[in-house]
Image (cartoon, rainbow, N blue to C red; front, top):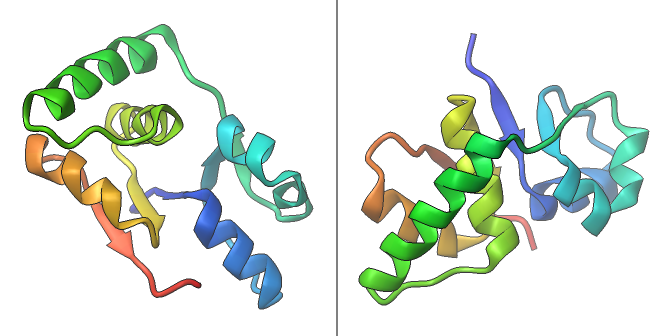
Length: 111
């Protein structure tokens, strides 16, 4: 079964539309949008390997001239390390796909 990781924008959209979600989110997304705790969703916390991968991703993004916000790099690192698909409407995650073929995003039309 595919594991889904929701980014903040998708959580906010689901909350506004009163949708129920099944899957995961990060503690960073909870800090950005605490109402996510009203969902029955699993909150994951970063590990040392997530931080290490985030630093590598940030360096690689800088090398190609496409840095993205640090929290988003952390979310991507956690998704990669836990082999999860990220659900987001933030198109800047496409930069991660440019440097990592094993990073998968489902882009939504959230507004």
